[in-house]
Length: 457
Image (cartoon, rainbow, N blue to C red; front, side, top):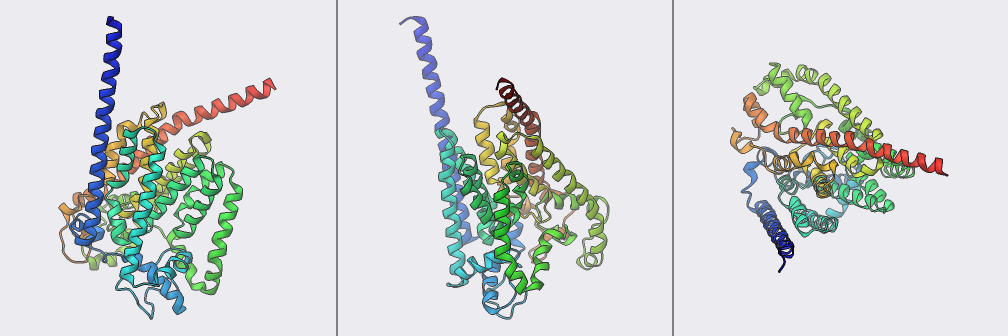
C-alpha cells in the first residue's frame, strides 16, 4: 500500500475511533442524567434530598404552591376572591398565597377540584413529567449529531431546581416548557403556533411579558394586540366582579424587593440586598428587632435596586434594538436572563426557566461559529453552579420553621446567595459581549446587501 494511502486510512480510522469514543462518553453522560432524574423522583417519596434545599426544609410542605391553585379553585366556587388568604372553606392542609391571574384558578383550579388535593398533586407531577418527555424529544430534533443529542437531553435531567419544582408543585417548569416550544416554533417559521404558546404563557404566569421588546423588534403587532386582548378578556371580567382583587395581583409588579423576602431568595436583586444590608451594617439578626427596623432596611435597598434594574433593562433594550433579527433566539435568551437579574422574587425552583437557555446555548456552541466562542469558557461551570444545589446543607443552623438567614454570618449568607445569581450575571455578560460583537456586524452586512440590491435594481 502506498504511504499516502496508508496515512489517509490511518487518519480515517483515528477519526472514527475518536467519534466512537465521544459518542460512548455522551451515552455515559445521558445515563448519569437518567440516574439523577430517578433519584429526584424517589426523593419525592422518601425525602432524602430535602436537606439540600432551604425551600424543602424551612418552608411549608410538599405541594404548597400547587395547593394555592387548588384552594383558589375552591374560592371561585365559594364566591370568594382567589387571592383571599383566609377563605371560609379551607380545603388544603397548607398553601402559599395565590399570585397568578384568575385564569389558572378558573381552569386548572376547577379541573383539579374533581379529585382530592393529594391525588391532584400526583396528577400535576405526572403532567410535568410528560412535559419533560416532550421537551426531551424536541431537544433531540434540534441536534443531528448523536453525541450532542445525548448531552443536550442530559441537561434537562441533571438539574436540581427541577426537584424543588416537583416538590412544591410549581408552575415555572410549565413556563420553561412554553418558552422552549415558542422559541422552537418561531425559529422554524411556525409563527402562529409560537404566538398561541406565548399568549397561553401570559395567562398562566405573566412573566413571559418580558418577551415584548423582542416581539416588537419582529414587528409582531398583531400578535401583541391579540395577546393583550386575550389577557383582558380572561381577566377583566373577574377583576370588575371582584375589584378588591386588582391590588393583590398588581403587587407582583408594583412592589419592590423587601428585606423580609431576602430569606431563601436566589435572585440577583436579593444578592444586592444582602450586600447592602450586611456590609452597610443594617442587617438585624433578631426577629423582633428585624420587624422594628424593616422600614429602614427596605429604604436602604430600594434606590440601589431601582438603579440596577434601570441599567440592566436599558442595556437589554439597547442590544435588542441594535442586534440583527438573525439572532432572535439569542435575544429571547437575553430577556430570560434579564428577568433573573432584575425581578424581586427569584426562588431556587424558578431556575428551571433557564433550561431552554442552556439547551439553546449548547446548540449554538455546536455550530462552531465565532458567536459561540466566549460561551465555551463559561458554559459548563455556570451550568454546574445553577444545576447543583446551593451550599445550604453545610450552613443550615436551625431545625425550626424560621429561616436560618437570621442566624447566618455574612460569609454564610453570601455562600447561600452568591453562586446562582453570579452565574446568571456571567451568562448575561457573555451573551451581551457576543451580541455586541457579532449582532450589529450581521445587521450591517444585511443593510449593505439591501443597499447593493437597491442600487443594482
